[in-house]
Every structure is written in structure tokens, then in C-alpha cells.
Length: 524
Image (cartoon, rainbow, N blue to C red):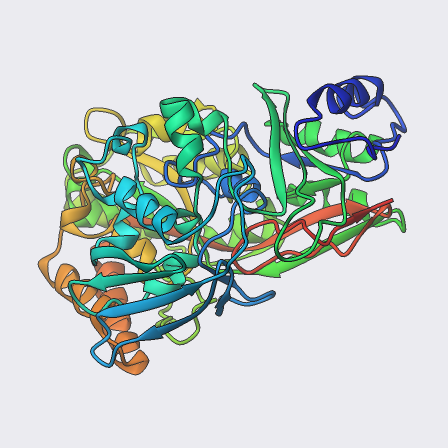
């Protein structure tokens, strides 16, 4: 089934072809259309506005619709040019001058230029901007050092920072730095997240809630035309259903293959892809109220959970045991501390010291979400380990976006413990957004457990302005030692991401960034 007649807004053709194909119903031995890549996602996207979302599940779509000024070079987290052809940095690290690519247009036909870049960052950072409220902008923290953005001519833009900021270029390559069409935001307002327009290799066609997001080839893409005519992102929240769809041919690519299903894709008709990246899977502990306000109880939870068994048995060896908030993929900043050992006797001793035997714990678990690593089996195993040392744990399970809506605003008044996973672009990101005192949810951060340590705050503030990598590394390593001892989380696993695709797919790779870059993927 060809899509040769698919035009910029050829939605009628695309929809008719989809309904005629097996891509939506996926009976046994279904065949998805040639030239159309069907990707099984783990959840419905929250929005398609890069400034308003935080989940890698959403980012996997966004990175194919939008471009940033810079991007990560293939297979690395090193920055290379994208919408900016080049840049210069002042000696004091406060001024970044970007020369923009000329002749680029947004999917809605409006021009990309310096004024569009300025508009994007003012929308995120200026509360008085007329479209600031179409967010919120949860990762605007990434650009908190930006003092001013100005167009110095039609294709030149200058960022002035209020202090040196080591992760600035890397953050520009992250989805929060993707450039949206000002005209489209002004047209759709708060509905822009369902009507996206960028400059990327694919352009938005339709979003049917809980069914599919469809994007089509951008014939005018500045970096070469995409190999596939269209991509269909299907949200399939149940892991077993996702596996069945992959086996039956209803999808061509499946991300985050459940460990227990890996052996089902051993045949020649499938390719299993793995790629290490900066991932941390952990349990947030509520430090504002309840039993985890006591450090001894937090440490007891860390000793009580058999993380080797979780990694080896539940996750089938697809992850390593974690020891802190910085992933080993950031080898230059990773402290390599010994993880908390499995020691249920020590856990019982600590609970007795804290007079916390039988402590009642409400534990939030998600059905599935970005990087969540078999969250229900993991949650059940964790519940059993905690119960074995004297905790009384009640699990509450939620769909991913509902889960985020309960956890991100803070655990106070909600739960004592919650699963969480982060995939990040810089060692600054996760601790800065989740462990600083100034990152409490009411302040716009993701410190949902309300951890606060002035020494950690100071180290993180120093590390993000240090321009020497060795100095940054020293500060991060000192921070990791303190955080391990304070135990605001239970540190569980660092995952090696995976995906499987059918033998009809060529040129598919995974990136250390955890994004899906599909421009060069061929679907036969």
C-alpha cells in the first residue's frame, strides 16, 4: 500500500490507507503498509509541545517533528549544528552568538529566523509573554541562566547568560530547546500541543486519542528527505499487548521490550537493538511527612530491597544496580560508589532503632511509562522485600500520565514512596531538578520527596557554573556521597535501553539520548 499521493495535509489519503491496512487491528500475520513505519509506544503522549512535556515517551515523537539550534551527533551526547550552522562563545562564557541556517520554513509555511528563536525562548522564560500560559513549562529550568535573547540580524541570535552555565549547549539539544512555529502557537493557543508545527523531517497529520499519532514526510526538509513516507506512533500501554502486536505484525518497531519477552524475538525475522544511556530508576521517598522523614527508615528501605534479584530476575539482566543519582553513562562524573547491599537484618535493626516496625507505606506504582522497567512486577517484588523486614506496604497503581499528575506535584498528602525513572543529557539535570531545596514542586521543580540539604544545594550550584570538567566532576562526586548517605531515594537500577524491529525495517538505531531519530529508517 503506497503513500505516494500523500501531500502536506493529505490526511484523507493517509486515514483511508490506514483504515484499509492492518496497522490498527493487527490480526495474526498482519502486514503494515510499505513505506509507513508503525512504532509501538508505551503510552499516549501528554502533548506534542516540546516546551510543555517531560516524558521520553513524548520526546520520541517530538524529535521527528522539530529541530533545535543544535542536536546530538549520532551515537553520542556531543553537540553538533542543526538550525544553527555555527556559534561563538565569549571568553567569560556569558554570551553565545548563533548563526542560523537560511531558507528553512516551519511546516505551516512560516519562516524560521532569529525572531522566531527569540519568540520561543521568551515564551518559555517570560511570564508576561502572551503565550506563556499555554504551557506550563516544566523544564524551563534548563534555561534559567538565560538573561536575554536578542536577534542581532535576520539570521543571527545572541543569548546572554547571567552566569556561566556548563550544560547550556547540551540543554539546547534536549527537546525543551526544540523550536516551535510562533504562527502555529498564535493560531492554536492552548491547543498547540495537539496541533504541532516545527521544522523537522516529519510533519504532523493527525492525533486520534488512544489510537495513533501520524506524521508524514516533510518534502522540504533542510537536511534531506526522510526515507519513510509516514510514521504512525501507536500507544499500547499493556506490555503483553505490545509484544503480541509485534509478533503478529501490527507494529514494525517496539520500544522498551519487557525483559521476559526478549527470547520471543530471537528469530531471523526480528532484530533486537540495545544501547546504553544515562538512565536512573529509583524510588522517591516522602521526606516531608510519614516514616521516611527519619533517615534510618530511608536507609532501612535501601538495605531491605534485593536489587541484585530485581536486576537479575525481574529485569532479566537488562540493567545494573544503581548507587546514586548520576548514571554510570556519565563516566567522567560518576562516583562509582558501592550500592547499598541487600541486608534485611540491618534493615530490621534500623527500623527498631527508629521505632518504626510495622510502618505503613503507600507506594505509587505505574502501569507503564518512559524507562519504567516492568514497573508492576518491580513494584510487587519491592513490596515483598519491604514486608519481609517489617514495613506494611500498600500499592496504588495508575496509568502513566495519571501517575505523573499525582507524583510530580509532590508526595505530601499523597504517598510515602513512588517509582520514578529519568533519562538525561547531562549529569547536572537529574540532581538539579530533583534534589535541590529550590526544586520543590511548588517552585517548579521535581523534588517530589522534598529532600533538602544545604551542602548538596551548594555543590550543585557550583557544578553547573564550573567551566572546567574536572572541577565539575569533583563537585558531582562529593554530592553523590552525601546523597547516598542521606538516602532520599531507594537507588535501584541503571537500564540498558532496548527495542526490537521486524526484518522489513532497515537503518534503525537507538541513541544514548533515548530519543528515536527516524529520518533515515527504511520500511520495506
